[in-house]
Length: 221
Image (cartoon, rainbow, N blue to C red; front, top):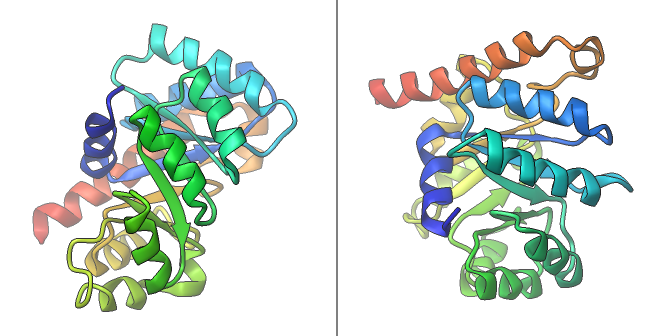
C-alpha cells in the first residue's frame, strides 16, 4: 500500500490496533476480527522470536483476503531489523523510540515511519528526520495536556497516542479533544483471556465501538 493511503487510513479510522501472537492461526483470527470491526491499519508488534515468520505469513494472507488493510510492523529499534521487514513487504514501521537510521530506511522504501516520542525536542528531531506522524508513548505518563500544549509551537504535528488509551467515550474524547491524529490500542482491544477463549466476536465489537467513538467525537466537534 502506498505511503499516503496508509497515513490517510490511519487518520480517517483513527484507531490503530496493535497485537502480537506466536501462533499464525490465532493472529489471523484476531486481524480478521479487527478488520470486520472496521480497522484498516493494523500493527503487528515485533515482540517474540517467531514474529518475523508470523508477520510474513500475515502479509500474504492480508494481501489475498483483506483488501484495503495496511499491515505494519511495530517495536522496531534499529535499521537492520527495519530493513528485514521492509524487504518482507511491511506497509509501515512503528518504533518505540527515535532512531533516525530507521527513518532513513523507511524513506528509501517510501513507507511511513512512526517513531516514539515523549518530548518536544524529540518531536522536532523526528520531523527533521522525515517522520510525518509521531507516536506519543507512553501516553498515560505524558498525558493529554501535553498534546494540547504543543499545539501552540507545533500546530501541524500529527500525533498518534499509544499507552493509556481506553476504548471508552471519555478516553477517546480526551485524546482527540487534545488534538490526537490517531490512537493505538493493544491489550484493551485484545485481552489475553478473550484471545485464549477465541472470543473473536468480542474483539470485533470492541474495535467497532472504538472506531464509532472516534467518528462520534469528530461529528460533534
